[in-house]
Image (cartoon, rainbow over all chains, first blue to last red; front, side, top):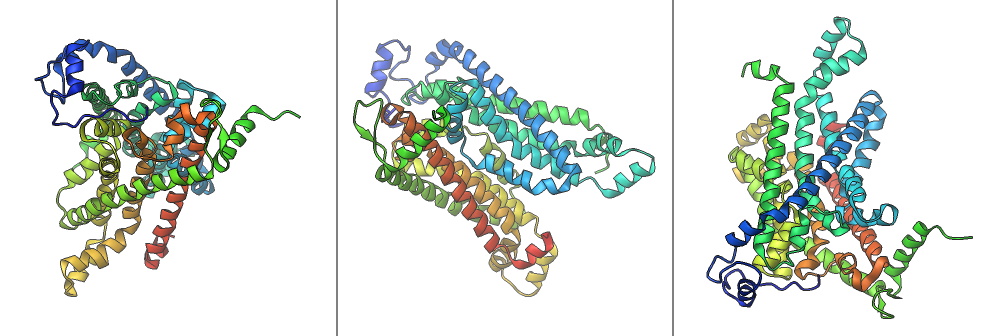
Length: 245
Length: 236
């Protein structure tokens, strides 16, 4: 750590670069300093394991966060007075910077993936909880009255009317939560939980190629999950297509 | 009676904040203490305030203007969404690698993270203002600038402040890893474990968490003061 050795962007062929090209890295001094294609081609394999760790942590965290936040939202939907304290509690969890959160838990849960998943899932709670509540609150009373008039019980109204109608908001919350979790997971390298942050941190901050590849993989992950969730939303709410514009 | 190890590590960390102590890693050299804590705390606040100010100067006028004109929804909302997906570590790493280290380079980089929520919320907030209110103001002969300043901004305050709070949270958090790019902050305690030891690690985490909660709390209070009484009645 300390002071990373830094080279200005314009200094193509600086000392660092000569060192790299004459050493183990197949980079030529006259190549673009910003991105070294040869190195990327030869070293893309090393991103496999970190990417997989990254993915696992994100999936676990969002899944746990969703289950907990969804349960809390259903509880608060039935017991209205729970809403302000739950919003405040999830808000506090969201406010504590993730790095501080990691290290506060360290004496309890130690280095590694468990701590990472606990913090990251706690982080998703606010956004998923808030959006689920928003979705449920947005269901028009007339629709609920109609359902009641047709003889549906409260439980049936919740699962067959309210939750389906709240799906777009719930999925919107999941999209935001997933994207920010993918981004924050880069920091779990600080508690030795792996992930794509390893490749940024390990680059010693003097080799942009290594960092840029990790960023590109993260961007692809964000896009892929967004597309997946949008598709899920389309499949779960087929009536929205039929709605006149 | 034996002290629970968990309690011991936390009390060790609290002690570290107030009194210098011999580190178990530097071999007898005294580290930590109140003076060092204040020094790093001020550094953390400095970079946070600077970055937030830059983000406000760029994001707020742009968001208000776009919202007022009803243009650039794709830009405002797109930046808002993309901003959340930017890894903080990547921002710090790329700035240190490509641009340079130190406050001059890091503060604008952190500001970049803050612009997204500020711009997005300012845009959305202004768009949500009742068009009838804007028409009434225009009918009374208000200029476009005073419509933004005296009608749209006051009505959009809760949403606008939400964006500013979001920006403050992400900037305070990212300032924790700013030492990686040569800016002193409370993150020093956390990142330089080979100097400050385990107590410093935990002390840094406690201080960063408290600082974030304090800033968020003050901004929430500010929001309450700035929100006009008429709006409070409506939402209550």
